[in-house]
Image (cartoon, rainbow over all chains, first blue to last red; front, side, top):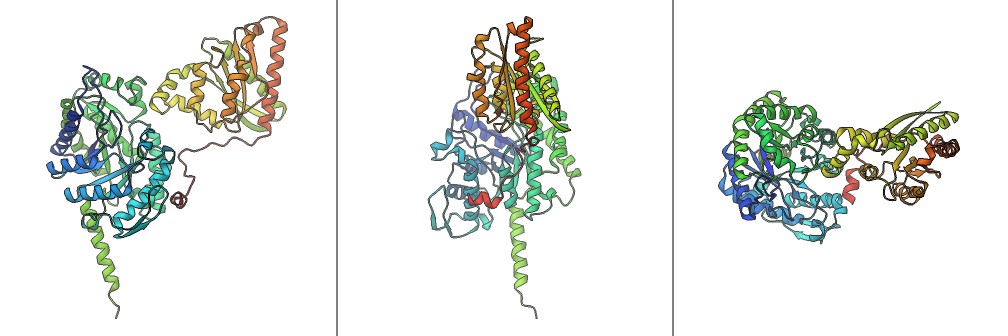
Length: 371
Length: 203
């Protein structure tokens, strides 16, 4: 199982002192956080993509390429890549390029983006969010797999004799996850392609996640990619930890109460009850996280949101220490012991390359004439 | 005997409230009227006061806390709804509006609804037809022709009691007949796939 962190890249004033980082400080903090993630033994760093204030990560491959150069093992991903407003041709090129630079340590998560005003800035309309996600990804999927593409669709100009360059590393496209909170069409899309499905699992109750994952698993099997429990599932999660749980509650409360998305709404206690948010000791985080498996089944990737709502970099790095030293080693062991052998790990470049080689070898064997 | 469900939404704030009082009378009259048509009506009352914080949290976070979720589900699954609000500033109260603001926009489609309101004097009564009825029209509910307004006077002397009783019974009869002539309500599952992937790909 893979463990990691995902960031939205918000610039939010620290509610305890009113100070907001500059964009430059925030961007550098994201890099420091990614490097720390590798240092403490996490597997994945994923960055959001936003084109509106107060967010900084508008150019994910620039950031991930920079991080790739300073890390060795960390898998670089997105949370999410906007499949609606980006040109699929540019996504194909950018992420293939990143794949080469990072020696295959790349996958990505498609998302629609729910900020209405952003769509028209890119010539799109949020009301076409689902059709855009379907059409653009269908094209992206082909661009990475077919050398020369002729294509005509509704949302971009047609392509004739187009080759997206560079070609994916070793001819193996990056693995793709599809993220969605509550759109069954996206779970269906992930299932159709045999791609991964990632549930945000932060802002919404567990019952939503359970329904969406169940639908994805059922359709994954329907499309012949394996049994339902062999589908590739990722979950988000949100934690704040201190050794002593009361310290965590006390320290996190002002950040929770003023957080951009849910601040000035439910109490932290209500939100902890209604969503997967855990504020407490590392042991509490371990227990809660192990519980996720009970409603989504054995899953492949767990990403935590740690750096948001104005938390200072120093605090986030301390959170990463706790995650890497006390939480993830236990989770790795416990999840591994629970997982049946037929449930696969999340695909990586190495595993996808090996699978492609096996397929090629099998095809070669078939071609040998029978005497 | 047919079995149907009636959900009563009351936005009264005080305890006891005249809004709840009116809601209960409408519910009782509806049960009686339905019974006369061979329909056994199971009723459930939702007091929005109990859900006030949940409603605001839903507006801010985008999802309903568990108790509010149960209330929204109950309304969606109901065969009919009685909705009663106090009149504030010539319209529904903010609490009343908030509940219907977070309800799924299709939840009331083709559902029989009886609207009612309370206020200090009869001068507020047309708010029902000028402000509250249009909202239910927008939500594509089947709002019965008689809406029931009760002013302070209506809870007073014998004569006014009879007049209110007459309006309550007329409205309840209209609601019962709408329930009787319909199939049971069906619940929309937001997680159900409604199109095939081929259809999605075809745009």
